[in-house]
Length: 248
Image 1 (cartoon, one colour):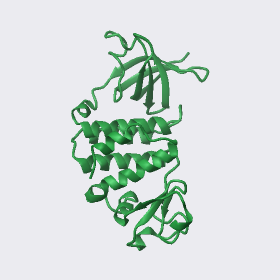
Image 2 (cartoon, one colour):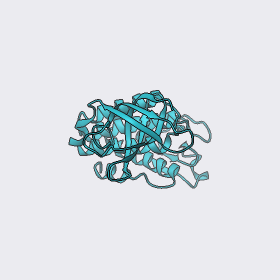
Image 3 (tube, one colour):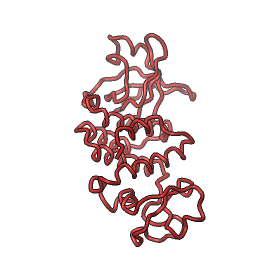
C-alpha cells in the first residue's frame, strides 16, 4: 500500500494495548483519520512516545482499503502548543475545540482552511489565560467549524422572517432546531429556543468583536454550547470544564 505524508494534529489518543494506541488525527490535506499506532507507547518508537492531544508534526500513514483503521507508521513531532498545559482555562478551551472538530469532521474529508484555523486558535490560546480572550478565540473557532462543515447558523437576520437583527434593541432568541436567531415577533412560534441579549447576538453575528464585549462573552459561549448539545444529541464532554472556568 502507498504511504501518505501529511501534516497532522492529534485530536485524541486511546490506549489499545500495553504498547499501542488508536489515534484520531486531523490532517491538513486528507481530513480526519483514525489510525492504529503500533508501539507508540514505547519510549523508543517512530512516534517519539505516546501520542496525546495537541501532538503536532509530519505523519506517514497507510489508508485501509476498507473502513477499518489506517496504519500510522511515523510521526515526526514539531514542538507546538506546549504552553497550553500551563494555562488551565486555555487548555480546556483547546481540548473543547479538538472534541468538536472530531465530532463534526468526516473521515477523509479535507478542510485545509479549518486545519489552519484550529492551529491558529491553539497558538492564540497558549499565549495566556485571560478569560475573555480565551472565550473569544474559542467562539471564533467554533463558528468557523460550523461554517466549514456546512451547518453555519443564521445570525444576522431572523431565520424565520428575515428581519435584520440589528434593527431591534430588544432581546432575541436562538433556536438550534431552526438553526438561527429569532426576532421577538417570531419566537412564540418556536418551542426550542434560548433567550439572548441583543449585545450577545451582536457578538455571535460578529457585528461586535468578541473581545469588545466582555460582559456577554460567557453568555455567547453558553448559547453555542446549547447549540452543539442539540446538534450532537448530548452535551460535549469538555463544555462543563470550559464554563466552570468562565462563570461571569
